[in-house]
Length: 400
Image 1 (cartoon, helix red, strand yellow):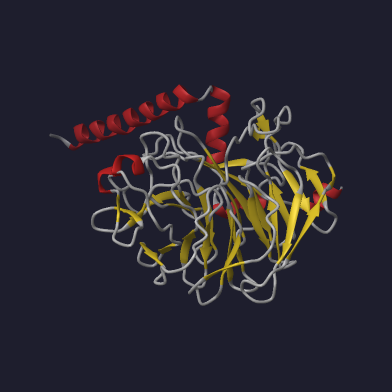
Image 2 (cartoon, rainbow, N blue to C red):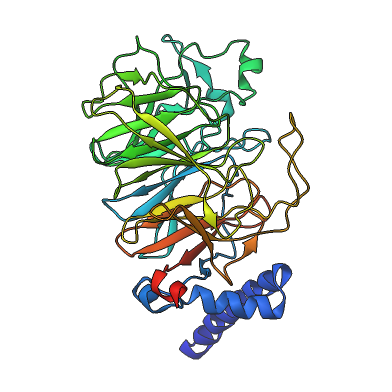
């Protein structure tokens, strides 16, 4: 075969693949949306300081991905690598994803650390812990909600959730007796549990967690508040009241050395502030805040992250059309969400004009990238691959 014929075949393959990609794109997007998609995807990590402030841009949206964002999953930002991870599963359907998915803003790419465990490998081990996998021991697929964080002391992800809604227990005829804290050791990409299994683990369902960088303490909040000290040997229950139910988010304010909790079951726009004690497990104090400023719709299980450079929080609640009746966690379906800044110094919400998005429903997946000084939000559903959005916050322009 001549070199000219070979080049023609290669060109045909290239343009054929491009045509197929465009046809797939047109299947999901109209022309205007496709043009915007191409423009947004062209943003590179070096361009983030140049993008218009206080509005969301698509940073990465693949035409194809072999996994989907699941609403009951959570997210954690790795301050060492400046990447972030998603772990968690809906488990209500056939897809039990207990993989770790990592996004690198520098290369604008997702990587899956390992394949999900075959459901046939799910079991309860001799300790009474639910495990899965063959060559590597993995936790069960579970709802993580906001009970996942990054621990810089051990360079690991920490999961304090428990798999209450995984139906495999019925198939096995037994449930785990112990719900340990899981550590995903990133250098080796392996899951580990704590050596001391004779303790009361938090094992939270639909709760939240945060890393107190000032004290190097891991905090887990669900059925109660618990703290794991810098030595990571034993959880200590904190003897304080619990003002929340479910579906809240807890974020650490590194400027004020306090924990802020947003959202709650039955929806809320109240902000609760927790000032921790000096020692691990020592009681601190709660303070209830009713913010002024712009009206922020009450909501639950929505994205929240703290910007340590501006000293404020960013949140994306849904614009719910009403308030649920007592005993009912649902309201009329929201069609969109709005983006708000919460300023703790002024105890005020400030809405970002032009930063509305489609309704988030249940979404815990937003982080603040302290290296790039930008917020990243992950959206997507069973029908479409995950979309990574980016927002650069400029408080000075809001005051003008």
